Image: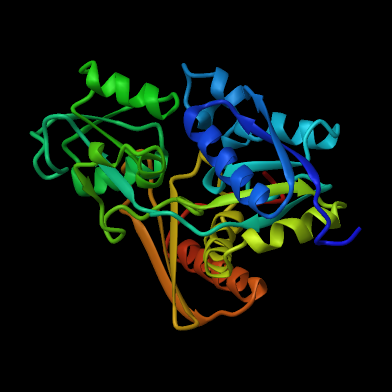
Amino acid sequence: MSPTQPLSLVIATRESRLALWQAEHVQALLRARGHSVSLLGMTTQGDQILDRSLSKVGGKGLFVKELEVALEEGRAHIAVHSLKDVPMDLPAGFALACVMEREDPRDAFVSPRYASLDALPQGAVVGTSSLRRQVLLQALRPDLRIEPLRGNLDTRLRKLDEGHYDAIVLAAAGLKRLGLQDRIRTEFATTDMLPAAGQGALGIEIRSDRQDLMAALAPLAHQESWLTVTAERAVSRSMGGSCSMPLAAHGRLEQGTLHLDAAWGDPDGRTPLVRASASAPVATLAAADALGVEIAARLRAGGARGVDPVAG
């Protein structure tokens, strides 16, 4: 099949407002290239289980499994994901066909009363269910109470507005994509709150045998973003990372050199944050991956406790 031939495509998507925005964004880009595109809305296990943290019920893969089943059964052809929700190793038969241009990867401080983290009073309650955010917040303000916060973006904002928390921490990208940037009181510097691997980037997953889809999606790819998140995800993969591991990784590509920073924290607060950084010329996904593996080795050498990917 010619790569330029228009295709009839179905996008599998979660039904949260942010997930639908992401799917509709890809739909519009593909339609502009002559393809016929419809959406298949789905509710995943990750959307249904809201009373427990993801680290205790199976991880962020719960947000993508049902979408992968739809791809496998032929009910959909592509799935659009927030890349930070995608497991580091895809199941056999699936491939990441495209990483799109990244939105702001930073974390956002959101509060109706306080202008910044520093402005919070001692003992203030901050909502997040991310172990990464928990250990980074504890390093910045050990006096704060970090309380669990699950649900889609609108649900989290509603819980904040109802007074359950003094502040919450969210991904800036999601707020900006939904036109809610006015809720952001301040954006954390990445030196203070290192983002999650892939945060702010969209990835498109397909069945690996669909070379026609690879060709159709190629124009949507953003090489700089793809190189950067590949390095970040390699850190997490090499550490055996999942949402049950308090791990952060963030890269930036400047004139062909990829600067990569990572951090690992102890959720019990018994040991200080372990940080690692490295830079290298990067022009291929393999080179980006190798830099991420190197950073993971430095984290382990500094005392970070990873999980053996073979042992689980």
